[in-house]
Image (cartoon, rainbow, N blue to C red; front, side, top):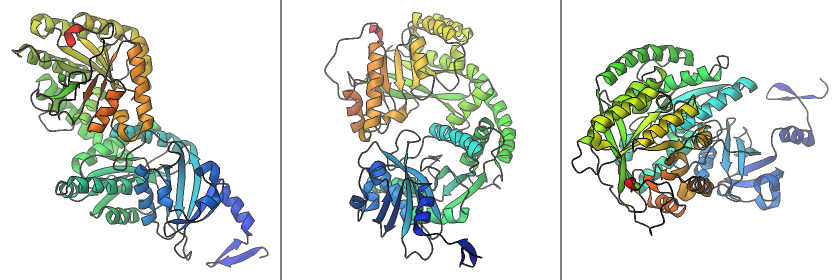
Length: 547
């Protein structure tokens, strides 16, 4: 056949190099060839995409071109770039400029003398940047998954859910020194992100169990082999194809059910072959557990835990957040979500505030202050306000010592009605806080239409503050906005002194996190009191009774 030549026994078009480059550039802005971890050749819009010319890139250590938090991810991709296997796409931050992101796909072609080809395009991040040792929080993973479901429906891309278990990983980590444990966390995170779509769609479920979404273009056995090699712990995995026809909401529910089952049971059972099968199995279990949960709520078969919230102006515990622990040892996150889905959340909220008020009434020193979570669904119902009024009338000692944190796990249907109820609670001497500010699309609408006392900044924006100037700028603007509205702020997930220094410098009022204490069976002083700062004038509207 004219114009054809044989290659590996297959007739293919004979193309000159210019035509090959044209085809390559149709899917990438920049083509890079790597050898022994260094740039051997760069062709394309290097200055625009990488901030350096083709000549300047030549000879550079490829991994060193990326932000320190993404370097391990790129090294993981390079170390497992087997012949013929496509790695990526992943989105990474550049070292310079640090706000620039690129999408990278790697492929090592057979008989190419170990050279690796990289297709590079400019990209936007999927969410807040991750540190080298971090994976997506579960709620962020759900958000990313829903976006991928929509993209898959439109583009036809085939995705699968991979549930990964590393045998004994938690025990291995416990035996390490702190520095060694961090190094292990980096290896685990980079290995999993290297397998995940976009380098972001991976989450930690427990010490040994993880989940990721990836394209269906590689055998699961190859992924398992790479993960075992990178982490130095025996990996096992089960993959479930994601069906594109059922709608993203149904797919997300099915994914949640599958992950809840995996978190609870691991890979001991015969895993489901499809998400629909996973959903059907879980629905049966969930209905049984929902019945048990309803009984537990009605019979008050749960315990309270207390985590200190520290005032950054005094260095002392200002109040304690009330958390719930169920007697069956089930995940509070999963059980709270189940309570919402089966309309048990209002009864649970009533039960928790009842227990909290009794705890305050029994505090002989009258110094304890407690914050309880209230769902958006509950705050919209007048019966909750009436219930609180009756409790405070009966246990008068609790007045002025109760905070309500409104969560966004269920949207508030009527903001005007919710605001009326909030003002009723405030008139009883309670403060009202908006929890996880910034986590949902409704946050700013809530702040605009609800008269609040406190805003709790979502931990996703706080946890990496010391290493992330972008998140620092965002938190600073949030604090300035709240200050203008005479609303105080809480930063959650404060785990290091460095993050504490940052939140103090931007004017956050209160802090909560493991730096000050984990949830405990009784209210305890902060483990490490924050260093007090110079006193400042109180903002107008602040309640003196709350310190």
